[in-house]
Length: 332
Length: 244
Figure 1: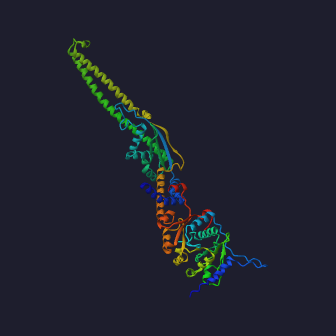
Figure 2: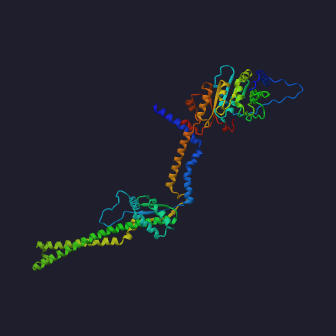
């Protein structure tokens, strides 16, 4: 009962707002649309924008076999999601911005320094990186001129490819250093064991290598040498594989990062409008309209509803007469 | 010094001449009788005006009803005309609409130009009181206000002191008085003395509530028989209005 009364009271208060809203619906519509429209016109005519996109095919890097998983990659995410995560982290660094700037300079992207400064101020944050599937990553960038947009995306791909290469090279170097040390130790041990076997045979001229089955000490020395030989061979193989992988980094990374669609501009002037800003302008227009509506309702003290008249003035309503102007009559 | 108010006998002569004109003399052409321009109000409008006058309780068989508003342009004269038409049509009795808005004459609204009116007659300008038939009904009459008068306050005072309405009631059982807008004149308190029962016209979306409150204060709540909410034109869709 109490809720229905509250609802009724609220509805009565709303009546005035709704009436003003519908009475000035065209004005409110203009008010809501005017800010986004102004922004759109400004974007089209004063600050033209182009949008470039590029699609990448990514996979989990097949790094050197010293680690079961890639460092920094979440095993529960798809390669595309991991790539987006990596790129999101990378672009937040000053090193990324500096490298991007250097690459864009190399590509003769900018007309002058002011354009360079304005683009570089927001380039890293304005790039939209999304995972469009398990392996597909989409890059989108909106900027004033077509060469800037495409070059920025191109530079980002190059930076990310270089980063992957560096990662692989770093891991390969670690592995090579590790295997080289291990191999050196194994070779030293082999040399020592071979020397011990030679000394033993020299000290016991009557004992032949074929007597190993009946001479335990000789058997041990021979097995040590054999084991050392196997270990040296195994480490040498691993070292060779690692060196091969390291040498072929530039070839192997094409499976990890492949450009499906090279950077290209898409859409026309209107489709290149900055959506975020447009949404903000739309929201601002809506808020402005609400403020105006509230102000109008607050300042409007005119007679609107018969029931309000009866309630406030406590006078009976003798009649409610519709507007004669609707029937084309000008009353006096 | 104020001029003397007209003798009632003279008014009765005018009324008599209006309601019972002399028979046409044989051999003479009929003298054209002055009449107001027909104002074709929609039937639904007259029906709403009927609803308004029926909501007022009158003590006797005669009806004297004042129509006023707080401000100009609220459709007061149209509502008065609608009520006069409705009463005349319903009762079949002679009904007169007395135009008392002396500052903003509505003669043009009725298609009248350059003629004396109530104000001139009250001032004793040696002009007869015009009682004009309002077509299409034969029993509906109009007493125009006349031209705009700079001394409207004095004239209205004379009206409030005169027995014009009582005299009219002798022949016109229904008298609708179109009073001036209350907040636009300095003599609004006199308006309350002209008629016992008053309908206050308020314009939807235009008349401020404060103006109506002030009008109520000037007239006195007991004299206001009701409010006519005129020009109602809600833009809210019907289905939404039902929800609210």
